Length: 246
Image (cartoon, rainbow, N blue to C red):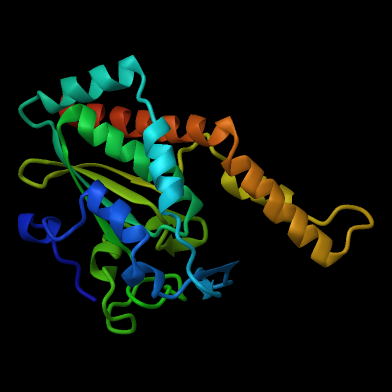
């Protein structure tokens, strides 16, 4: 699958945040395959039952999301620079807790800086069931975009979500943010959740783990980590705009 550069024409095909809010609860979205809550050994995901309407979560988080005074000033300053940020491309899936955490805050960042935001689904009708995207195997997806912004770690390359890519007006890439900020040690936290406790059955451990993760998502820490993601993006764009060597 050849990577194509992001163009103005392709960027324009994405959804605005308002359009995305409406889409998440739409019959079109709810008819798509649901994530089954299980990541496979090869990095894919298992499909599950009916897709849940997550639009109320996005609306609530957007309503409550507030950039700090410093974050607002920073994005306004960056956007005013000759080579400053002008557009944010987001790749998302509403079943992802990381997307539900960050996408409303990314919308607030774009608003504060006067940036154009466009949101793309990663998948088509089927959930990606492997590590790497494959548009031929998964028609109707945006895997050609996803293939350009894979997460890389000791395990290899992964189609992780969300992706937020900040561009200048000419679509020069200024910064990419993938999945979660560095201070959110999600893998370690989730490993602690899923580990069976003494005397705990497998079924009881699964139920408790799900409850603990849901409680975490509803805690103040999700906003702390969403704000940290904004800080990472602002810092990365600042380095690029001011010419700090990488």
